[in-house]
Amino acid sequence: MKKVFLVEDSAPLLQRIRELTGAVPNAQVVGEATTATGAIAGILKAQPDIVLVDLNLAEGSGFDVLRALHARLPAVEFYMLSNFSEYPYRQLAERLGAARYFDKSRDFERVRDLVAERAAALAH
Image 1: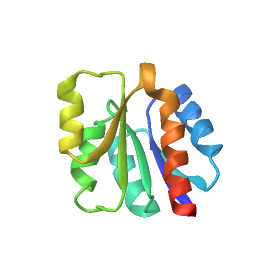
Image 2: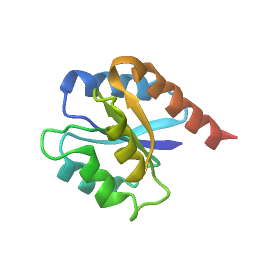
Image 3: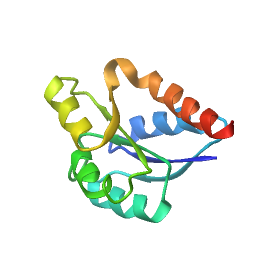
Image 4: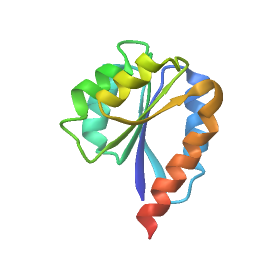
């Protein structure tokens, strides 16, 4: 079972991501946060396999989460979601440890596919 942690400050988007990932076999949402501080504490406690993290949060940013945790939790796969698809954002996310960067306006459904792919890899 792949454990997934969600970091998103928009309630409707958080609900949608929860629905997408919750429907994936062999994947379980183990925590959620709306702020960088809450995400850092929650991820350290939950020890997920996958973290889906929004760039802009109610307090702080997804970059703050990556800076604080990527080196401490190298086995965790971090994936960033954002409405900002410009190259500098993608480049910084990757430099800070994001495995992939998703544009919410066009890649949203790919998040489910990614979680399904990672959960299926674990099952085999």
